[in-house]
Amino acid sequence: MNTTEAPEGWHTRDIPPYALEMDAVSVSYGSVPALSGVTIGLVRGAVTAVIGLPGSGKSSLVACVTGRQTPTSGWVGLHDQLVASDPVEWEGLPAADVDRPELLIADDMEDAQYLNAAMSPENEARTVLVTTSAAAVAAAADVVLFLVEGRLADAMCDVPAEGIAARLEQLAGRC
Image 1 (cartoon, rainbow, N blue to C red):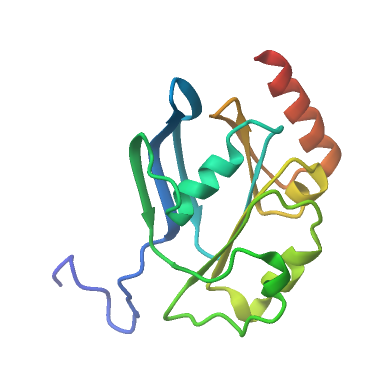
Image 2 (image 1 turned 135 degrees about the vertical axis):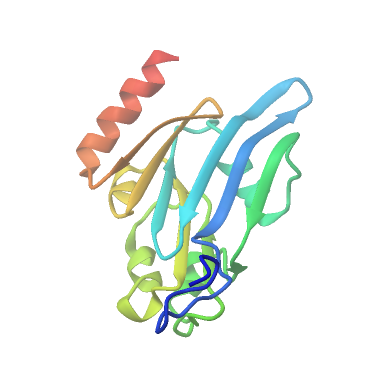
């Protein structure tokens, strides 16, 4: 068998495993850095929360993802269809289409109630990226990325809100 062919009975699609990739993305506003060398990959079908204090670069990250901001350096690859950035609209979205994976984005989410509307078993092709400074929102995500002074400082999974808040405080205190 040729190694470039899938075994008989397997289904293949030309859809990358990531909904979004960022590689060494930096953003500066004049001489002020907002993001510094951020590299992430959002796994398709997962909820990822980027948590940080105000001014940590969360909105600049979302601006790069949505195309409103061109990175000063680095690369952003958006592989999925950007569907809606306003979480209030998420509840009314039809089920995700497996052949056209979707990415939902929310900047500065303060309440986790909208995450439940976005994710359900019939929406496995839907990926969610939220930025927040609220540990309770981050705790509802599958993956939590910590952004401190424009740098990716840590990542966690399956941590309660208290643990996320303590880690953010610890990381922010180091800078």
